[in-house]
Image (cartoon, rainbow, N blue to C red; front, side, top):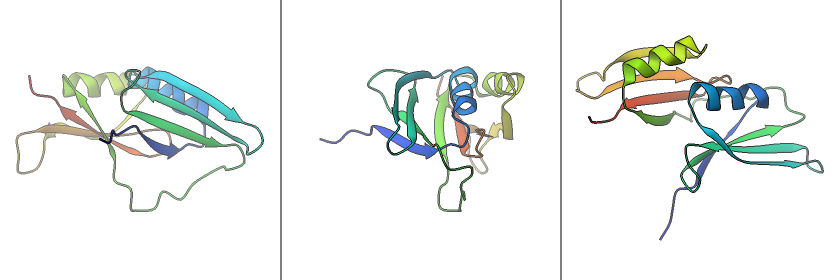
Length: 127
């Protein structure tokens, strides 16, 4: 049996990224390690120990990354998508697609970006 563990994204400002994922999206820092020999820091954030997490990789000597066009987005389920978007905006987050029904469907979604520009889809969970 396999289990989905984490998704790794490279970040340019570790402190800003940790603040975004913890304060704006309500995640917790689950693990943190530094490797001085190879000059990188790994911080795992998520909602619960043992659950799927995001690995924030900070390479000490890299100032920016080419986002390319192959990566799509991360997706998070939320109980109230409209309240979530309001809260994200109030905390300084960037909502790039306001909450509303997906084109041609009934599921309500929104899109936000993290400090490095990674897209995150918010999906209204069934009530």
